[in-house]
Image (cartoon, rainbow, N blue to C red; front, side, top):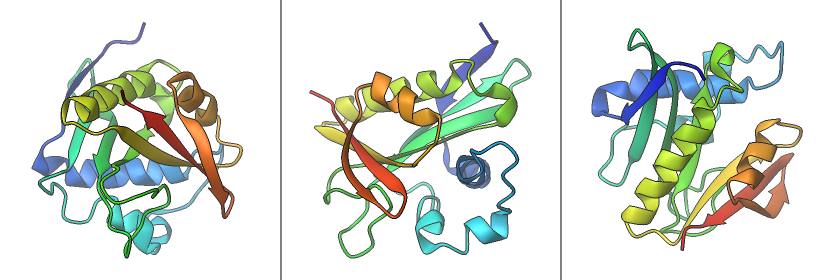
Length: 163
């Protein structure tokens, strides 16, 4: 197993979380959506704007040298400014990104489990996410209890009941 640790995300992690939004957008091998292109989308900007708001919760994975390698966090969105995985006000949306060299080594699963445990402890009944069609992470999400509840614009919205 790879050598990494998980710690809670802090306000100064905003720039790294932005990098992880870009990694998530570039999930395809050879994808080259640069940061300005990713953040031209207001929804992508919404995943990190003003990090860390009071309801924001997240975790950062660190390699053996304590360098960040991945992150997962959730945010609440309003009905008038929904994100890609929006299902209802009061249901947090999970965002996750892992650097390519660290994918398929359990980092994403560990981050996701930490985050869903935190959401459950915070009293949330469900958590949602959005995944593009064809993304290999779809299988991970299903294995962690997420189910597709809608499809729009080449993306599936998935929800996990936290009960």
